[in-house]
Length: 353
Length: 252
Ligand SMILES: Cc1ncc(C[n+]2csc(CCOP(=O)(O)OP(=O)(O)O)c2C)c(N)n1
Ligand code: SF4
Ligand SMILES: [Mg+2]
Image (tube, rainbow over all chains, first blue to last red; front, side, top):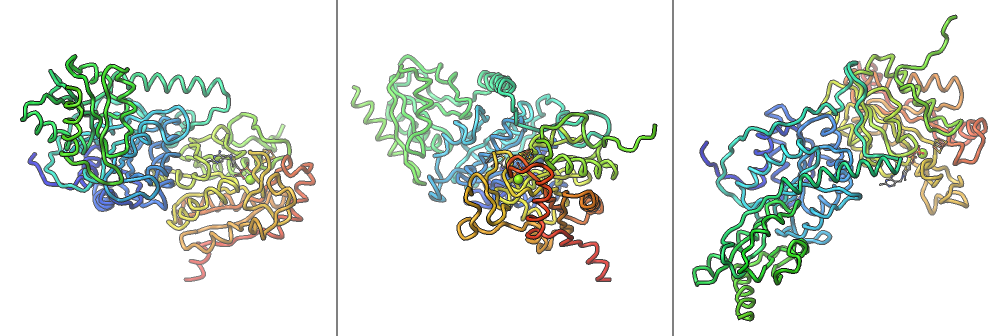
């Protein structure tokens, strides 16, 4: 299929529909509103339902109900709206319901700004809701990658019976890029024989639930969930590595920031420096296997984020004190420039010479 | 020997956890009988609330989902939009529906969501130990209104049936009580009618059932029924507040 030019948010909607998503429960918020707008126009054409909820809380609970019936269902929002969805996300993780949630991050805290940001890293990876649960979190860096990972997200959600979060930022949501929709055959996915679709008089009732009043039973449930998360950690890490061999310094950045970092890297490498880039694609599980590929020559890691520094905590964990870790970034909706990154790199490398 | 009374197939053959004399049990039976008599058990999906009736998912003999506190109407909306031909109901307490979940129930009604709600008003938060609910009567003592609810401080008790009856999307709204055999029969009729409204595709239906909480009211079960009759019914009048099918009939 030929490439077509599409806005990030709309491409996400189209990708979801092509992945078999037929239900979308949303609530308007900048900078992701084009997603519900797209769904409201296009879902009915394929026999699906778009419904505007009265709040993000209601929207995620509608997703819960729909997912409990076995439907492929999605919701999307931006930072403060995702904050409101945390209750439902935790309940879905507990009840093991699959769904895909999109967060086009904007500046925070509070009402923050409507400009692009990456300050929901903690919210995405540490669990904004209550309890011992994890989400699979994808952080694509282009509109094409958004499209690819939305499809993957639906399959993984079904495979693991777990909510999957796809995070972008205002830049990816709003920018137009050429995309190609390549439908990949879905993984061999399990039957949803747990769904509440009415017994039909043929089976015992199915129950969708996250309550275990007996402490031992809840612990057993948590151990079961934890095994699932460990399996995901083993099998679902994704990252992109560039120029690791012989690198003196490796930049660690994801999403839009990784694209800016790549330009900074290219500029410096042309001048004879040896800079690499490690781009996490899954924020959870954090791609620690990618860090095992770092070269002995690499003495410095520079974390760049559109936040005051959140992912840097995970870099510290996987680094285990081996290399020096530095940070630069902008926040509040300000996008870091290539020169900011280049200057920081030169400062680090020239100081250590 | 002639069988005069049988357990409805709408309830699973398990014992419930309700306190002795609690009328949640009666309301479960009425709901379950209505499901059975309308022949919808095998295509029903119920939504349990957070409250004393949280374990309703173990009691009703049909597919069930357990919702977060107050969110049952949103969960039911998600279910009904995926499975419009199935029968979808929620069972919710007054803390659940009239406090934390007010937005969800009001908007489900506004959308004319084709679901049915059994709303159990016992004027208290039963499960958490008898705190004040939005429905707690003026002057009523609870663990968080130890001197009696003062409406100037805590507001007046909320009348859900009257409020929802004003919403265009609401098709059937009735308030009933289970304090006497005669009222129990009327309650059954109302719940069944509410369910039929959904089966006829008429839209949102809700039955508010006045119920007792002997444990947290601190009153013996028989006296609790009397207390309900003498204190709740005057403030929460029984009757039908909305029946679209009748309005349509008179329009013609
Ligand atoms: C988000 C959240 N807040 C508070 C609670 C605690 N809680 C559990 S049940 C309940 C009140 C239930 O009262 P009601 O709906 O009147 O039901 P009843 O027990 O009286 O039947 C509360 C506040 C909770 N589980 N979740
Ligand atoms: S606490 Fe009250 S409402 Fe709950 S089961 Fe006991 S009597 Fe019923
Ligand atoms: Mg109550």
